[in-house]
Amino acid sequence: MADDQEQPRKAEPTDDIVTSSHTLGDLAYTASAGRVVLRHEVLTDGKFDGHIAKAEVFVTTYTLDGADPATRPVTFAFNGGPGSSSVWLHLGVFGPRRVVMGDAGNLASPPYSLVDNPESLLKVTDLVFIDPVSTGYSRAVKGEKPGDYHGFKADLESVGEIIRLWTSRHGRWLSPKFLAGESYGTLRAAGLADHLQTQHGMYLNGVMLISSILDYGTVDFSEGNDLPYVLYLPTYAAIAHYHGLHGSRPLNEVLTEAEEFASRDYLMALERGSRLTDRQSIVDRIATLTGLSADYVDRVDLRIEHVRFFTELLRSRRQVAGRLDGRFLGWEEDYARERFAEDPSYSAILGPFTAALNHYVRSELNYHNDLPYEILTGNVHPWSFKEFENATVTVASKLASAMRANTHLKVHVASGYTDGATPYYAAEHVLAHLPIPAELRANIETKYYEAGHMMYIHEPSRIQQSADLTAFIAASIPSP
Image (cartoon, rainbow, N blue to C red; front, side, top):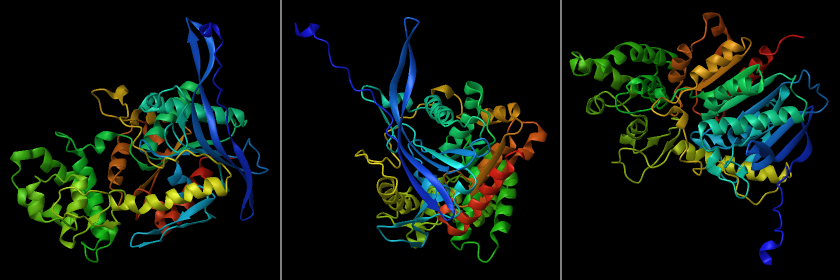
């Protein structure tokens, strides 16, 4: 009978890594690109039932030819979202090739171009770029649920397993190891520092947090939470300064005033509520610092939500400012709307990075796949934070735990002054409240740039950031 016939087994997915040789100046390196099969151990009735393929994760690796694995650092890098591929760090600042896209007010025209990146971190570290499941070319295998990976804990476990696999397969357990994350990737990196340590005994030399968001409570404009309004104020002042609303005052002077006002008078004014007696003076100070009208500040009850700010700031000029980077400007079809329809800074960067990646991976890395490379996808939503039910999403305690257990762990935090997604003053707030002993605070360094979320699209910031990261890695490695 047909039912008794043995059914053909589905083909087991395999890694499809492609390698190629390249040079960057006098550096010779090997690039590898392809999907690594992620497998889980399965127990059936308490018995081991094998390693079952669950997902295929796209990884791009650069290793310096002839380097000693025992002393050569390796950095595992990823972006955020959730739902973002690693394209931004990969082709923006870290990798040996970078996209040329221009900058605010002077964007390059399509089809864009790629050039060598002599400031690449490849000079000091091997690089492993990871695209979490459902981003880039990473996908769940046939019959598996992508949603199983779309959540805080599952994401840590899957990315952590790729890091463990790569380290083991390439004999790099004794190499100095670093994590680098941007945006939600900083929350992932902080969580991974603890996860890798406790689950795999993998201790790191350093964690690089670019456009940091470790505590969602600092950016959650929800009823009863006044903290984001306070922590965003210096960013609003920086954006207003960039657009000429502070006259000839130096930026550092404006930011110092904004920070002092935010942490004292503004914080206390919001706490006072209807008990506030000098309301008009507070309204006027907020208006002066943010570039908004005093009438607007009064009408929103002193509380300026960030997208409303980007929409309101230059309404009189019939322009909106960017969220990812407030230096960028755009237009709306309706200038009476409360919140802009799209972020002009995201619109500016999406095209160049998408074109560059799709060309680069096929034409230069020789990896071919007919799947769309998901630059930044909404397919990961809803993203699960079930581990934080009825609590604020934060990994500050996890980063602190990793630092307390590994007292050699160094942390680098990079912030852009005009970043309206992950404000720099919020990052400072979280760092100041990390539950670590005083002697470990010297392990944290902070760097600032006069640009936004992807600060490296601003050429002076890119060059300075590359130098800062290079110095951080060198300083985090013990002397022989």
